[in-house]
Image (tube, rainbow, N blue to C red; front, side, top):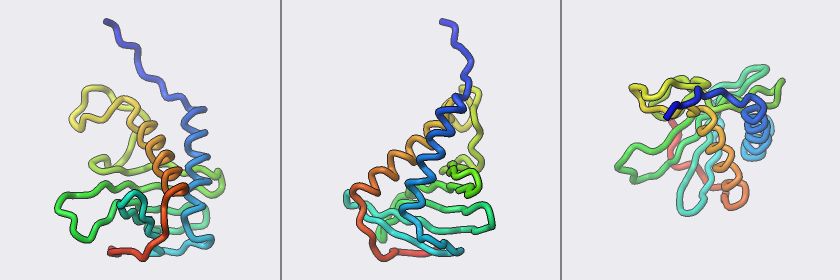
Length: 143
């Protein structure tokens, strides 16, 4: 079986970025500043959005699952919002310190060929879930 090389669907990826930007802005403060934290509870899980960096054209947000009594490492990702383009993209997730547009497969980190697209679609699904079912809470731990 011959495998076709993976090609990034740029139009689809940009659509995901644009919708993620709108959804994420609905969960963040209207005028974010560094170290602002928002916490949401959805389906008995707590999620924190922490503003890491604010510049004139971008905002960097760390999104993590938080739990007071967690024994295991919890999922974390960094998302950069580009305000001039009105898009948000996952730029870091778990073991990937920089998410590339595509990966050769197999690879040492076992990233999928379309890892970036999958992470950004997951972010969109998660944001939709939080907007529909999330309840704002006081942050558990900051830092």
